[in-house]
Image (tube, rainbow, N blue to C red; front, side, top):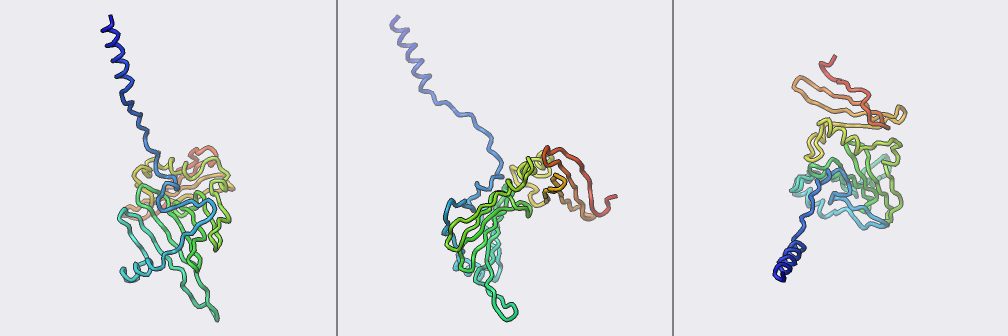
Length: 232
């Protein structure tokens, strides 16, 4: 009897010591701009500056090419601060910047603008040329003075992330691989309360585009049509 009890307790203890394997959840697609290692959302202040020395070295090495391609496929297009151009009888010091296009599967582009002194004064996000997410604006001292939430500015129930999911469902793009990220543009028609999406195709015989019109409040497809050369 005692032997049975000991065996039973041993089995219970062994079961209790077994490692429980957690259920693996499918990773969310990389649409969230905050996931990008090339962007930091500052809470109050920033000390980020334009690296002039690194820029000058790159220009010298690349013989004037302003585009830097990183090992992971990320592309950075530079515009240098401290550049002066003559306008009439005076001079204007222009602002410099960076346009960062992370490697696939990201669909976002990051824009950074620097003051003539090289301090970060604005950063924000684009998808196919459209402003998305939260833009941050800083004064010359690096203090955060304004944030613009473009999703709140879009009064519609459905936003840019929903447009991307729609295109993914239609197999126009692939959110997991980044396929098709350069093939479309979209905008919100506030007056008509509609999303308009243009998907570009480039067949051998000429330009063709598929135009989707969606209800901005329900995401219902209102119209699909084709435009371009040879389309009646």
